[in-house]
Length: 336
Image 1 (tube, rainbow, N blue to C red):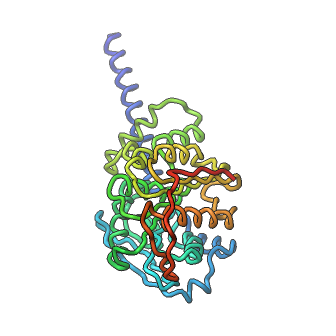
Image 2 (image 1 turned 180 degrees about the vertical axis):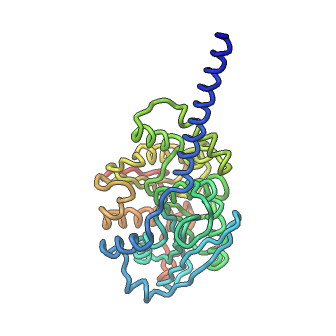
Image 3 (image 1 turned 90 degrees about the vertical axis):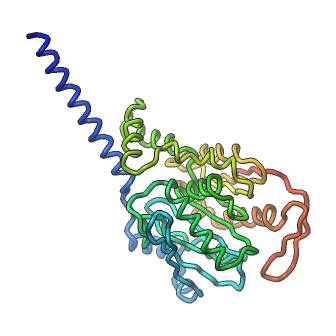
C-alpha cells in the first residue's frame, strides 16, 4: 500500500515538474521568437524628434525600393538610397525590435563619406516577411541574399561595406564568418559575442536564478520549435574566419549587451581590425551620443583599412584621386 502511495505521489511530482518545464520552455522561447517589436510610428516619431531622420532629405533623395527573395521563403524589403553618383555602397543591418527607418541616420553619415546605402528590414521586422526572430541564425542567410542582390546592381568592382547594430552586428558577423566574407569591410556596433551568455545574463537579471537548468530547457525548446540552438549563434567563433577589416564599436555604458563582448570579438579577430569604445552612451547609443566622434572614427577606419589596402593603390571613387598605399598596422585600439 505504501509503495503504491509512493509511486502515485512520485508520478504526480514528475508530471508537475514536466508540465512546469514545458510551460517554462514554451514561454521563454515564445518571448525570444516573437519578441515585441517597436511600433513603426513610434520609431519614426522618435527619429524625427531626435533630428536623426531628415525627412526632407529622405523625400528628395533618389531611391529604389527593393523586394529580395529570402532563401528562407519570404520577401526582404529594403530601400536603396542613392544620393551620390557612385557605386560604392554600405548595407546597414538594424537591431532587434527596430526597422530600416532607424538606420537612415547612418545613411547621412555614409553619404558624407562617399557611399550610398541600402537599408532593409530583417525577417519579422518592418515590411519584411518571416515568422520568427532568430538573432542572426536565419538572418545571416537573408543578409547573404541582400549582398548578392546589391552586388548585382552595383557591380563586383564597387566597394561594399556592411554596418550592423546590436542583432544586426551579430547577423553580419555570422554571415561573414560562416557563409561568405563577401564585403570589403565591416562595422560591428554593440553586437553580442555569445547568444547563450547574453540570454543567461538577461535571465539572471530578471529572475536572480543562477541555475543553468532553465537555460538548457529553453535551448531544447528553441531547437524543437525554431530549428537552432543558442550555440548556433556565437559570433565570437565566426569572427575568427573574417579576413576583411572590421571596426568594432561599443559604448562603455551599455548594460544590455556588455562591452566585454565586443572586446572579446576584437581579440578573436585576426588581421586588420580597429576598436572604439565610447565613454558616453547606453545600448545602441554610440552614434546618438557621439555623432562627430563616431563619424571621425568610421572615416579613419575607411581611410586606413579600405582605401589603403596592403601594397595596392585603391581609387577614391568620388574625385578620381588615389591614396598611395602605406604599410598598415594589423589593429588599432582606442577608448574615448
